Amino acid sequence: MSEASLGRIVALLAAEGFTAEKAAVRCIQQQGDPRAAINSIIEHVPDETVTLTEADIEEVLTVEPPTRSDRTSEIRVVADMTGASTGTGTFDDFLALFRDRYDRLSTLLRDRVSARSIASLQTTNRARHGIGVIGLLTDVRSTGSGHWVLELEDRTGACRALIHRDNDLYGMVDELLLDQVLAIEGTLADDGGIIFVDALHQPEVPMSNQATRADESIEVALISDLHVGSQEFAEGAWETFVDWLDTSEAQSIEHLIISGDLVDGVGVYPNQSKELAIVDVYDQYRAAAEQLQAVPSDIQITIIPGNHDAVRLAEPQPAFGERIAKMFESIEARLVSNPGWIEIEGVTFLLYHGTSFDDVIASIPGGIVEYERPDAAMVQLLRKRHLAPTYGSRTRISPEPIDHLVIDQVPDVFHAGHTHTTGVDTYRDVRVINTGTWQHQTPFQRQVNIDPDVAIAAIVDLQDLSVTVRSFL
Ligand SMILES: [Fe+2]
Ligand SMILES: [Fe+2]
Image (tube, rainbow, N blue to C red):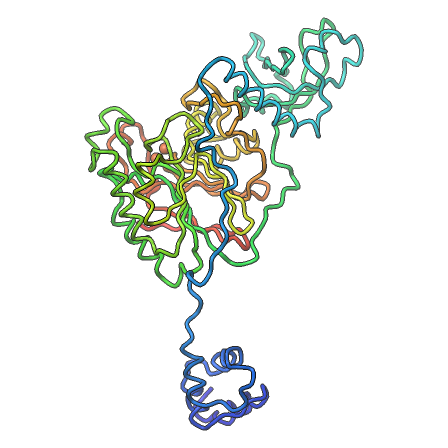
């Protein structure tokens, strides 16, 4: 609109049922976008207003857009095993853990496979085709002639299953992990000693899965692996991130989630002390709390521990203990176990640090999963509906009567860290996100050839579940 369009402004106001003093019309004319100003005025002036004064216009046009602190999105902790650890490490505890895993995951498979108990295979003398079995995968080996033999166990016994090297399923065996729950279908050999496999089923995310979305455009910032206390903590980049959280671009962010390795810890790997800027672990947490103080106070912070944190190493890991928790009281950080389940405005987040990814990457061939594609390891675990199936590998697992590492329900967002590499994927409508680290490459990582993705945050819009990866380097 030009200076000459005073009459036009009057006409637009009249069309909305308003008259206006001349000073008010001039005030609207001076706005960069008079049409937008009129829309805002119509929205904000009291209903009974008929004639607009200059004061009315000034009041409306200085209304600030709503800030984060005007809103309070609802967050709920859905599952946190802190304080619920009862395992004592006895044989019975391990038995209970695997029974619970088997019971819960076999339920997911029974919808798709008509399964019989393994013990009943010994007594069957008919229906040798179409035999279904659900079990824990206890062994995989290759025969001299290049076929796979799997061993499965259920509550009643153990059986062997053969996958012929010419079978289309042959390649799928590479993706299996020991101690995962699996269903097979096939033909029982005449002597009852082995099943010739026609079909393999993992517990899986249903094809029809549809993630829940929030009604409003609320954003959540996901980060992991700060490693405060390390000489390589990316403090400059952290300051850039925290400053950004104060900008208008970040005004929809209401939550900050940190999925483990908040500090670098002490004695985590050989000669780590030479790479530490802060050698006392409690001083590391004090420093971490100070860094988090700089986050705008109207952003709610949730933290789970990782393998560098000062809680027990065996998973599930409880939330930080009292002494550390006190340091985070003033910022009201929500401290949850690893894994932890939270729900924000109806959207469910599975938070897991990711220590088991080392085992997944070591046992599934490169090309399927690798450190450069941490999201692929996460998808593998979603398909197995378990965060760390293999017992006795690098990931330490605490024997609990309830297997807290089972992925009972399908999350809407699955967030992890640990690999220090970034990966984002959508698997059957689940957002799968790994957010790298805030630690520059350490001499130890240089030795073992780890090239980290530094200063990464993933911003998830809960309304459409879009994910934006931002770098703050
Ligand atoms: Fe880490
Ligand atoms: Fe880690």
